[in-house]
Length: 328
Image (cartoon, rainbow, N blue to C red; front, side, top):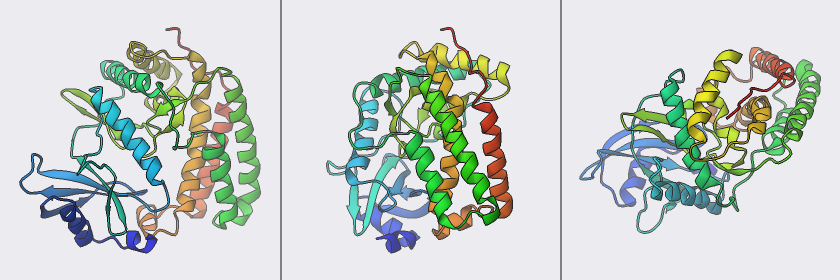
């Protein structure tokens, strides 16, 4: 299955979509996705001139985990929350053809959000508040939790055991990441009543598309149990004054639909630290995939590892700064 996935050709993509009941017109565009293979496919005689076909990477998620993500987004869609949920074909959302697992989506466009527009931030906050109100109703049963182990300890061990980390940097990386994970744990300890809810999990500006009707969100592939702040912190940028202003706008809208625990602001730099560690762990884990070597030619160089360690050192200082304040 891994070999078939690695060698997935344009003809196989079109043939698969045809076999699932659509008539393709030969147009095909690979979209910006690395963990899965995602394509915009031209369609004849359909309400939309194109659809999006996602071919799932083997062995990353179980069928049950994928279906749980689909169930969540379909529930959000039923609540009239603007997400892009999978299409149902013959009663199924997770489709099988040959060795491939596939989901199909309507193709919806939009522009990137303006992170310095307070009205947009407030509107996005309302949008995420609605998602989190629904996400808090019950937990995921199959999908994992975003925590220190899954985004810190595991990726760190992947890097240390990979043989990719330059030998002269190994002890520095090992000691620094151990120190960082201790700091992350201290941040978590400051949120004694932490609640985990179903979250998007990878909510960065590129996964939010803006139209005249407001935002819609795509790509729930990383949906996990996580603190609510995980879906918010990547929209807070700039210096401390800017971050405070953006946070106020964001949470003003968010709190109209879902209560926010201000103690979770202790986790902003902790989650940023985990994301940095996880990112290099992910690249390390996938480095034998030729698609990754083409997309990330800068990775696995001396300079890349040195810059990564520099980023981690910066986080070591930030973990001990006072968190942002919110008095909503």
